[in-house]
Image (cartoon, rainbow, N blue to C red; front, side):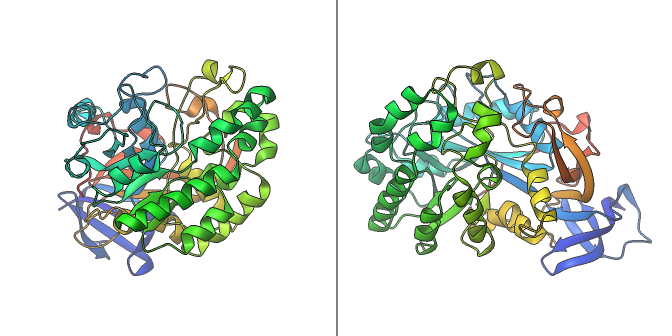
Length: 437
């Protein structure tokens, strides 16, 4: 008797696409093959569906503690599983910031009996001297250190090279970096203040601020022999630089920067104001090359909600960030249906990345002995995404009234079907765990 059998689906296993059944026992993949004569406590019929290893969103901001009016850990993880996401890595720019052992443990405690999917937390880097960053990065439930080289939401900022070096030389895990040059952006701030419209956001936080920051980062990382993960890269120039530095740097991209362009500021306004910004069509279209040639190693949503009332403030007083954890998978499925990338590439960027970037064991693959986390998708499902479908407490999406082709039908964590056809199994809330590194 199996805990769960997934039958009749096209499974993206470590041996490629296979029309096979999957048998799960005690939260692990126990058998891959023909299970037509076997029984299980629950059977999922995946006929005409694709069975993927559990897809993970490795950059989310769930705003708890301190900013729960925008989002909290329960609503954020609920949105994740409704969108097909089986796990998240949550960012440290809350209030207070996650910069200590005690703050990390507080977040882990807050997740107890509330989380809908697996989770881990980043600890925020600071300019403070005398911090044992290696001790912090090795704490249970921590996926690594996150550094903001450029100012964004919250008060975490490491803009000086010496402060950046102090952190990188004391870490052994890969350090996640928000790479924008804060000195350049401070000099150009008046562009935004005079412009008073989000169309000026990518002019203020220009390409040079990103390129300069990434060059500085790579120079220091090489000096101290550190490994870095450069988040939400937005420029073709940075991609070329990072492509030449694969030995020390891995690269993340966001679906927003592959979907929107500067023209969308005219209709979507501050809904697409984010850091780093949405840029021009040339960069948006040019980034796809690096998705498909292997330069990009991971993708996340950078889910960073604010209320619509906050977003309605006059730019640049409007906050940067948008929702995304519930829509990241359908956005990519739609791009796949349009021929921009393959389903295998999505698995690489949202599942295999657990191995290639973070070194998580027994996750991210459909293989015997691996954890039974799955995202099942219907590639032919056409539907319209709207604000009222969002689980986020902010209740909006930049994709409002967008027609997508492709949707997650099941979110399975540890062999438990948490979401099935947009319905949640409330008895399974909290029956998830932190990632182990």
